Length: 150
Image (cartoon, rainbow, N blue to C red; front, side):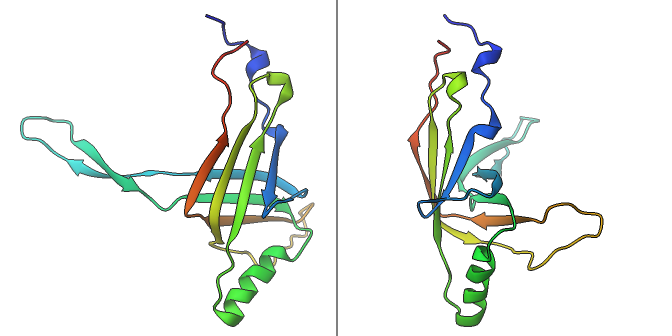
């Protein structure tokens, strides 16, 4: 069985992010997560309270980017002014060719902005960044990293 080595470690810098098919070239960070919904299931005579999974909670994610366009402000303002929610699709691609682990590609669907800082500046700051938390309804794993370490 092949051993894991440093060369198999995947660089977080090798990711790319696409919004509705267009690469977000000013993105800095992208994360998506999903969490199980569990309820306690205590049993008489057991001191450890067990849990039972009953579903999945609302999945969440966030994007951090250099502020370069009014894209997110436009989406939030459209909802404020018209009541029409703006949904979008994101695709994260992790492809570190040096690690030789293949490509991981996950698409998240029906994304919706949860919160938006409308404006931020700081006399001691450097570059203006936006952090955009969002929720999504589903995800598809289109490609996964390989298990073997060759």
